[in-house]
Length: 547
Image 1: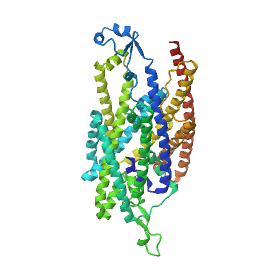
Image 2: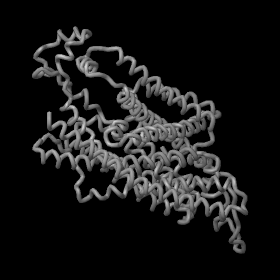
Image 3: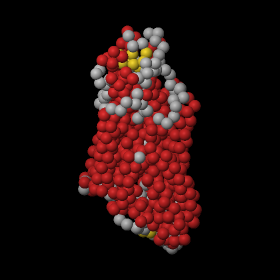
Image 4: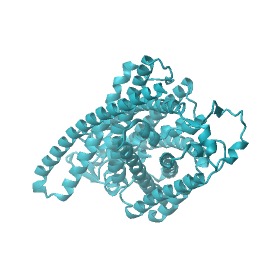
């Protein structure tokens, strides 16, 4: 969905600086997909390994006076073996979710920080989607978008919370429709742009402006991967096709975003004040300036999505292409609706995983659940998950109503910060710890002659393992740039012109210090988390070998 506001950030940079940063960002996202696919496999294997060791004494289970109904179970069931009840595999091997990945591969403290970052990220994205969606629908309906926000937010919220099984196939259909509309919109917009033939101005000194929005436009892929991974079997062919499909989707998104930005720059002026075209100037006044009240610069300052100036120009100056404006508006409505449903479903899925982990159950309750014996805690857990999800969406609705002009600021600053810090720190640490733990597990089990370790179906070759360290470097730079840009914006607003240079130097110094601290802390956290994981694993291995 960030493709609708991505061109707004190109008002000064133009197309070529954007191409450089966007293509490199796409390559880094694909690299992240490769390592995250391996992380999902390691999470699945780790759960299977743990589930093999979870045995419940049959005598303890039958001694409970509340377990009379268990006597009716078939004594030849697969769950009874040698005086023990072995919980079925599904009891411990739950589909991977973001919270579960954090619990498996992050140390205490980092897990909680990861959960907070995820919730803040999803909330920020949903707020920006609700603002952009209300603008798109209001533009078609011809009403004030402040009245559209409640309807847009709550209709989609109730679909996500109470009809999630219906939302998933609906999103698939709408995504295909959205992609078709985007292809048609880009093609038609290119045609209109060729008729207008507006010159695009490039400035590499403004290279950083589209950089953050580019990370948002392509970011968040790893957040949807656990939900999709739960639909496949953990075998090599399916995992390989899953990884390929994600990367092909990312590649398609990259190409369409580039074409969309290029087509829009052919139509909408980049700046409000620009040099007039040669056919409108006299031969003596080559420096004449033209002024336009419709531009990407104005839209950026007012927090508008890029399609608003595009449709305004087409309707006012090129009425013969008014049908193109309607096609663009239809695409935007479908695009934002799909984005809200997708991110909302991932948020709901993550909250369910968090509650499932926090809702500690004893072995009897797990056994009853697997044998389809209904207990009260199941209903209570469903009720709690519904209440928590609705509470989070209430926050989305409240902020959207209080700050309806902050679309670009929320999406570019806060959303980009949470997306990039998630990958630069937490995803990197999870992949790093998981790969080290898997290697150490295999070696240690080999030396104590216990061959119970299961290898993943599609590992990354060790030759390319060092590429993992490119991820925190790239996304760490994005985080630091985001923080530095925010500090500079605050200094620029609240500092007089005379003191701006010294304040700017101070902000640069603060950013440099922050960079050093972040890199130092990242190294320290990585070492400490690896040491903790190694010590814990050694203890578990030798305890299990004694048994």
